[in-house]
Length: 68
Image 1: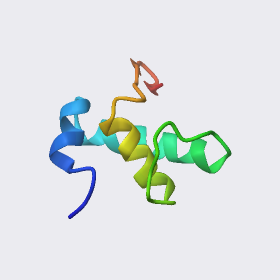
Image 2: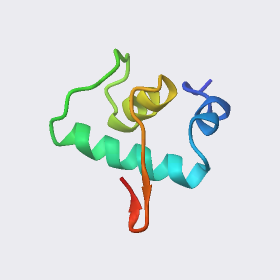
Image 3: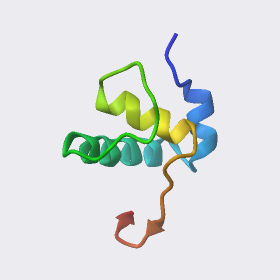
Image 4: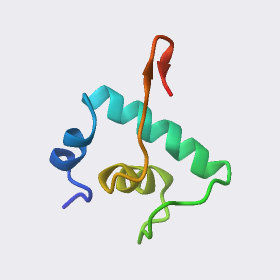
């Protein structure tokens, strides 16, 4: 089973597309050396980013030019 579940993740954002952009941006930050905000068994940056979204550790702001 995939953790965190897509059902849980979609409730944290306004759309699946927002979730993809948010996770991708956060994964890039982690790859560039940012500290993880959650304890994770995984060493994959995208999984860590999705776990942060599921645990409400990161948020987003929608602007005219995109997601911040």
